[in-house]
Length: 325
Image (tube, rainbow, N blue to C red; front, side, top):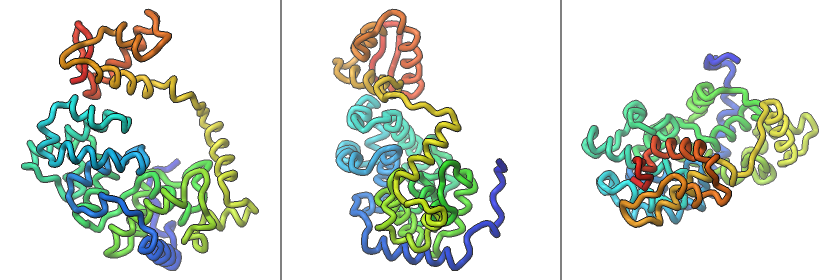
């Protein structure tokens, strides 16, 4: 597949673009979610929300967002806090490396930007752990820059609205999708547009079971029109079948979460949180706490797990054992 960004002639025409923009912005004006990070322009608070929202649903983030900002109300308090305290407040949000990464960003901003989070995508991308989506989100939501950005929800809505069904294979790669997002960005409406795309993707144009009957874009949506042409009922049944085809083609096999390394990483951090300060656990002691069937044969696996946690800044390991940093 070519990685070249498509020519503009491949993008939607002006009439479709205008129709989608108008319908979505009108819907958002009436139906937008009441979220605390939308009531502030504090770049630090928005940075916290964006890192928390990565791979985590809004309803789980809401209480932790308030708790985290109460514990670390400024960039400086986060930068100066013990990493173990930051991880402790973050738990049980999951993906604990995000807490370490967030603190590292705070420390970099303090040391390299005099405590001021940059306001351009180019400078934001210089912060370790900040990708193009998060850089665009901070520039747009904190500084009201007229920029496009693409997360999972935005990608899904844009693909379905302008290109059609994204399964079994998406028609654009990441660079091409960003180019499309920039092309359809309405003038002077980046903040509302990006928020609207995320709201629609999170509440109506969801992955497996889209609520097409409630969608404000139904009359202009390319995916809805495509399913109608093929006599496909626009329900989760269609999308689930398409997803199964794609997964089978790619050799994907799911496994229970409780057997994944992510699960055991979380259990390891949780077990070490219960220890008194500075106390360490040997690898066999840690293994017994996180895996009831742990045996000596599991030591290589556990060592690899611990090595990953150390690399991510979540554990401190010596010959005496491991503890939180």
